[in-house]
Image 1 (tube, rainbow, N blue to C red):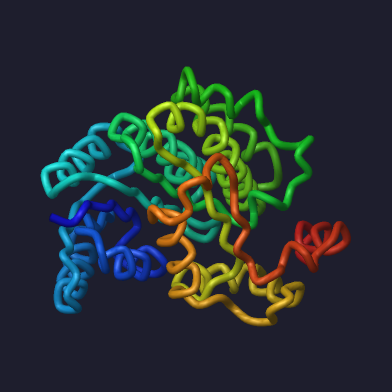
Image 2 (cartoon, helix red, strand yellow; image 1 turned 30 degrees about the vertical axis):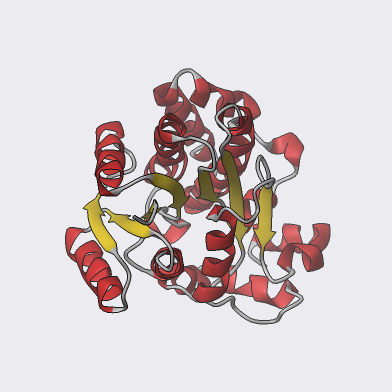
Length: 280
């Protein structure tokens, strides 16, 4: 029997593309919040020959995440999790963004650690936005609360994002939530390693997905102007990257973040970062 992989956010975009690749040699549990979309995604995968199981999951709810992992374990030996679920600044206020992107990462990572065994891998999706602030501005004291008091962590990170002008709060919450994903993934590497398992994060740049095009309207499309590859990435390109990281092949790759942005950050520099922050 093939091993099982979970792909959250699997109803569309990079999640669905990743599920299709993982499905070459895994039974895939495709998870999303919308029942109709996730069932349609699983049906489409099955039509393409993938052994796909749909699962409705609210990643902000620990019980819902636990039920997802129970479904996956019932489907077979759970070997990998790829966490692509998340929201962008145009999709919610600061509180929602922190809960989905940051608290969801805590819930999923803890559940993955409980399930981890030799050869297991968890890949969390962060963002180039997590690389945009200087490290001295990252609220690591607040991040540490996620290890002991997740509710307080959410409260503090949301309050921090809401300090600025109202128009900039979702963007601030997004950047800090994705910076947290990178920090938390690294912080948890030792616990996974003690089980012979791996955990890492991947930070996509600008990709041609529904979310990517939605954010283009808010100015993120200008990131392409700084990229070495002057184009949007394709969903299948980031999906291949995520699936490789989750596979058994890079067996010594853990505790790090991989920036997959077409050379955007390399071409941006400090002036570009300031211009992006100012919206100019």
